[in-house]
Length: 310
Ligand code: PYC
Image (cartoon, rainbow, N blue to C red; front, top):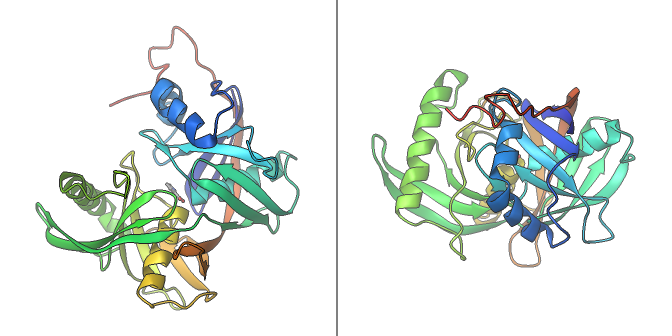
């Protein structure tokens, strides 16, 4: 299996160029469901140690249905197939360019969540215009064991986010274990209270948000992903959901650029335009760098051929 690894603001992406499972020719959403239900062993073995690493997101390149799209892609981490991935799309565009498969300039990419536009400005810098994002349920109050009452927004940015602002735990690197613990508790409380999308979609990511102490940076976030790793990047789909919340509250005018940073200080430039369904069309600009080109092996006598599930 041929893969190219990159990182976007510190968050790893593994692009699978060939050797993935045959998911047929249905819609991207149908193929994503097939990957999630029939090939769990595949995607976990690619993401988990010893082949993968914590926080890694996989990007399986597939043929698009829409002939206007340069490529189709299905994203996943070690625990789940996800609808869209912002850092992964920046990494994918940089990777395809590195492999000679995508020239500089604008391109459409098909994902299970819908079509996104990428503009490859140079070999590292990409703007993603994400799918329409929206605030779904504002000011949800949860009783969270060990933490107490927490108020957050349920919002959609290609994945389902519960966004708590201000963070109940200070957003500093030394607190990463405490933030991981607390966001897991919030996710469990959201599940227990059945806080979900219009069609029963469960919260798959939790964000703690706070103003940034860095001059010129609007805010800092900590994002818990489905596999319990934290996003090293400022999370593209999470930033999209966050833009939808800011816009819905009148806290950020359209076409106004702000900087969002992650818990490790990597940054995205963000803005939005009003969307046709009342949400926002987010624009996310970030950078990615190639870290490896490899061939993955799955040897039959390897006792950890399916990854370490501890
Ligand atoms: O950037 O959208 C994102 C993302 C989702 C999970 C990890 N990164």
